[in-house]
View 1 (spheres, rainbow, N blue to C red):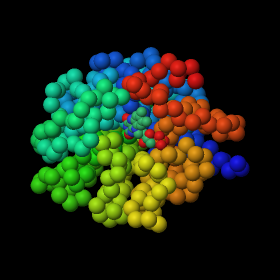
View 2: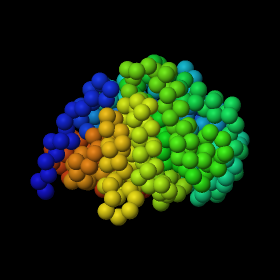
View 3: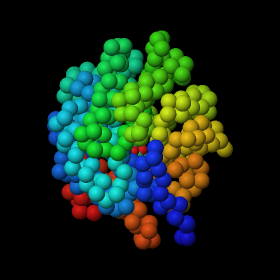
Length: 367
Ligand SMILES: Cc1cc2nc3c(=O)[nH]c(=O)nc-3n(C[C@H](O)[C@H](O)[C@H](O)COP(=O)(O)O)c2cc1C
């Protein structure tokens, strides 16, 4: 194996902020916070290992953003008040002490919330039964609840919650940047998705309407944080409860979504697909990262999905990605960047570490 890995170690800037290399930890929910949503000692140690291992960027797990409908999981961390924000401080401090860039992911679970200590019911764009079954490794059991259609007032509260939590993440916890979770079947993606959003108002119908909540959320976060703080959005086709979903209007949808984010001024776009290098739509066509690059030429593009293979990671940089986000490969190799530099072998991902419950295990922290 003689692959030129140098490109993975070239520095880059995101909205003027220096990032030391092209390797990022992908966001991963590990339900290891306290019941009331505070980051724990275990999380401090867990996140620090990735920074010590050479990752240039660490993106947190999805953090819930309000005390209404956003929480998705038992022991998910939140950013909804000063107490929760303060609990993140040592996590961020330790990530940054190794020179890594710390990004907080803001997440609203919407209709696929499995647990929420603030509410007994769920909301989605429309009252449509979510596909699939709850995730047992996050303490779920059986189908999802039927959500109520979110009201205009609740939409406004959702956006305000995202913006206020983003401000706490930057100003109190000390994060460098914000990623808005617009992917994987959670609330913002439920609005984007044709079959979960059957609204007839300005939030539903054509793709330009269905992407509106993502763009309005982005604008509210940007408005709260100002122009200098990096803000980006994560986008996918597939969902945790529908892996194979494809956008109906294919490249035209990609143009509307990525072009909309570009026009709104997104500093970065994080695209995720099961296998990031594959054509996003028809065989032989461009990948999703390539389309993001094309329609948002000024944004930093993060690509994710099966890219722990170094050869594919390097190729992704040629296919439009600027930064490679690695999930399972980082769990198996918290020191993956250092291993690449040392030409060491990578460990295979062992799915048993996520079972029976996906919480952080002591055995990982010893790695
Ligand atoms: C245990 C686990 C938890 C995850 N939690 C999140 C999350 O909170 N937010 C998110 O955007 N993606 C989440 N993901 C998806 C990952 O960010 C990533 O897209 C996925 O693992 C595919 O990338 P990989 O092939 O590098 O593992 C999670 C994945 C795993 C394995």
